[in-house]
Image 1 (cartoon, rainbow, N blue to C red):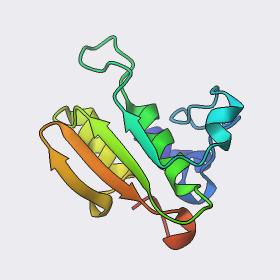
Image 2: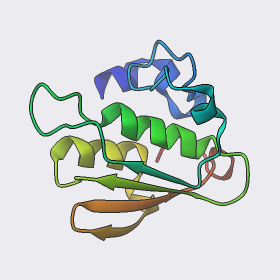
Image 3: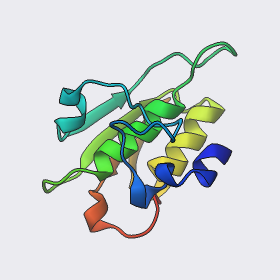
Image 4: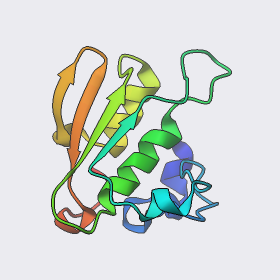
Length: 125
């Protein structure tokens, strides 16, 4: 989280993924098809994050938020995050997907409806 706060290329108003080498949270090496698709639904259930050597889901959650916010067509993007009982997943989901966009929680699964950034102001939340 400290890196996110210090790196302007991570901030909501500048958020982009493709080629973003400065923001360590950006998944910047995916295929063009992933970046060019306006997703209706994104599921975050990987990579593993339940032991110290695992990479965790910080970048996946951040990148899902950026993809959802960068949507151009009307409507929301439904983002599902699994294992929110874990501290890191919960913290990053709240920071980038925002409690105000949480529409349902069932067990360890949270469902967010993320509007395009053009329909909201300010940061991620």
